[in-house]
Amino acid sequence: MIRYLRLYLNFLRFSFSKAMEFRVDFTFRIFMDCMYYAVNIGFFQILFLHTPLIGGWNNEEMLIFVSICLLVDAIHMTVFSSNLWWLPFYINRGDLDFYLIRPVSPLFFLSLREFSANSFVNLIIASGIFIFSLFNYSISFSFLDVFLLLILILNGCFIYYCLQMIMILPVFWTQSTRGFIDLFYSLGLIGERPDRIYKGITRVIFTWIIPFCLISSFPAKIFIDGFDWPTIFHISVVTFIVWNITHFIWRSGLRSYSSASS
Image (tube, rainbow, N blue to C red; front, side, top):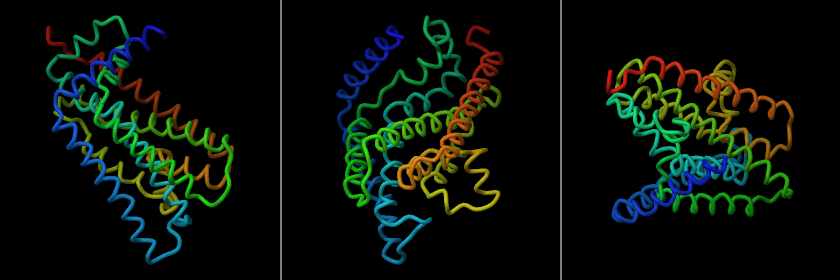
């Protein structure tokens, strides 16, 4: 465990030094993400000019939900996104060989090697929006409520990572340049809306089969409505399932992988 922590600290050191070499790109990405945050917040603010509730949530509650969405996106962009972007190219070109022979978990190395320093600045901004949404919330809450919310947000990031991997890893068999990543980004929009707007079979699909609603909506719902064992159990079961599916596809892909030396 300590060996992996030291390795990740080296990843951080390398990523920040590299980011400082491309300062225009560094600045542009910060600006681009800030615009993304403004559009997402502004979208719901405009809707609340015409209705007092959206999916059962008022403006204060919706701001908490939106801030969680932005925080999950910022964490993913900072920690995982750059790594997963290159994964299909490594598989198709045979560059995956260099990661499979290293004396560490290749999935760890491939998922965490690149730390996006520019997105880290946006993570700070997203964290500020999240803290503001909590201070703006008029109903009292405890430190334990916030702690549980943070745990659920991190779990949501993990689910998001697993779902993206599930969409990317078929490249082992399709040899496409991106796998099904475009489908992933389209489906990801589902998680940017409150889960209560989905009804019937659609809700079942979005909370069990392709569970994007668990990423931000369920953490917000538990924080707003209070601790709920069935919801916690739901999140735990789905997290266990998506991780095992991810791991199974990864192992199956490695068995089908044709290295550069083949």
